[in-house]
Length: 113
Picture 1: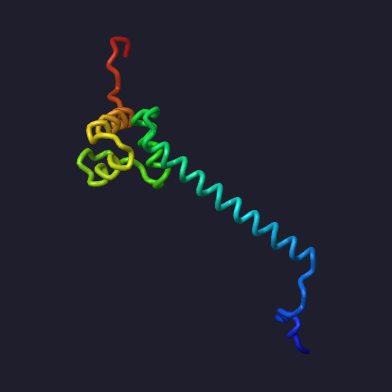
Picture 2: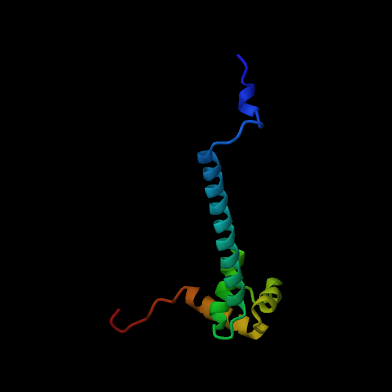
């Protein structure tokens, strides 16, 4: 039994097949456009003068899928500063705020026990 008809490219495609292929092609193009637009907006958020340093660093984290390191001498900080338009001092200030929030709190010593 021969299945050569499966690979016969000379047979005309049906209108339904052509429409289905066109629809899928349009879906892929729309998905690609949406991803490109999302990335463009993420880059815009990185340097927005209207965003706080915390927001700009958050945009950098989302864009790269990384967290800002807690080490104030980490080598990536220079790259974060260049990408966000922030100074190293601004980035280290945000690190300090984050480190304060995540530091374990000492148990309170109260007169009432």
